[in-house]
Length: 570
Image (cartoon, rainbow, N blue to C red; front, side, top):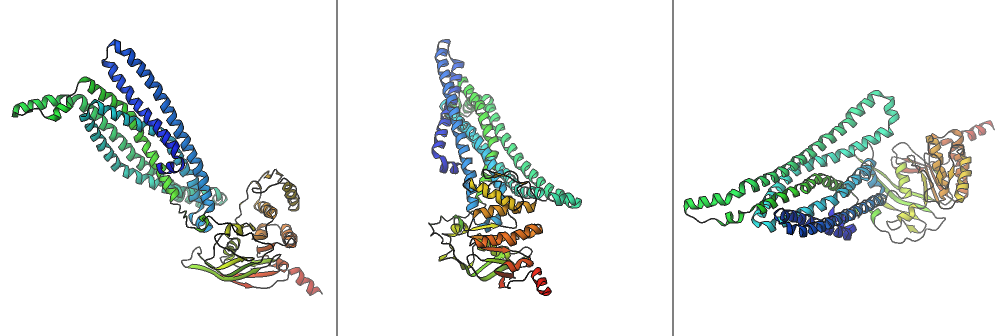
């Protein structure tokens, strides 16, 4: 996390740490002034009072500056992290995003970023506390170097014990974070599968007990285990400091006398150690005051370490999402040549392998050869799992062919121009998502065009469009799909893809789609690919293709039932 801060806002970090160190040294100076004032005469108290007031003012300014700078730094980094993480997800290849899954990405965007925000929020005070501890150690060394060695030994023992216990704590926190992914997946199932859970009591009970409760219980157990070890480590360090204060007050004052008695008994001189440990009341009082003063920032450091550890785990979790700078989506493209229109879209020997649900062996789509002419309407049909949607994703550029090539006009589609190639397509997928506004559109004249289209789709009584925003999305699935069709139509791209658009539409809207909208797009010179099973509308297509077991074939235009009936009547 510190390396991340240095990469993003190094100068802010340096300034805030400098202010924190100044605050720590000033705090140690206050302890020194208090210790001297306790043994000073009345005449010296006035001068020490002015020094005390100056140090208090400096401490206040230093702590305010350090806290403000680090808070600003933390918020800037969190802001950049949220945006950069969102950009990284959008730059990542679509297959990789599918492999990661929405639950894990959502957990990173919410839980992990929030955890890091909490860690950055706590970081300012921890830096100030660390500076106070450093200043106190300097003051202890000024009082007595020999006693400082004892204090440092106690700190080393405490830190070593803390690290041993912390390893167990970190394991519990990591396992708790792993449980978060499962929990977010179950929460997603809870919200999206609400109707199915409401209708099936045994499924609902099994989901609560076997999925949600089990994941939540696992998170609770791992979190309690991790924080429990941190509580043990925290109290271990505090008890060592109390033992150290007891040694300074009750044991060390007797060391010189005991050493002298031992030396006299065996006829030796007093050892240098006993002389080094010989101390007056001022040193003992100074050590006790300073150690007591150190205990609060040290306790804060110990209590803050679990938060920093969770922040570090969250950061590593974000890093291990698997974004690879070598992926095609992450390569900065060169300026591609502009695509000319109208243009022929051609697939030559295109093949793609993927693993279908419930099958161990990978399924191979292709090799496929397909040519789409400008102004052509092509229907694509096939059974479930035949590869229709995969072919559609290859066509629009969301999947990259493992072999073969795709050409648009004179250009071969590569990593350098794939982003520009995707901008040639408008699509309504079967699992479409509808935004609450016309994002990416410019010009208020679109509102008037959208309004006429709303009337055509009989949505004007449900939805209004004002300044590019929809008044509501509280619509049925069929109505939402009609609204998605409106958005695609307004995009005015050279190529259109409709994946089972008419599957959940009423007959009247199916007829409008096939007999009015598709011919209108064709008349405008658009190339349209429609994945459909409505065979009684196949006669409206220029070509009908069928995909079966990964192989593409042309089946010819099929007459509608009305045409066949009319022919029999003649």
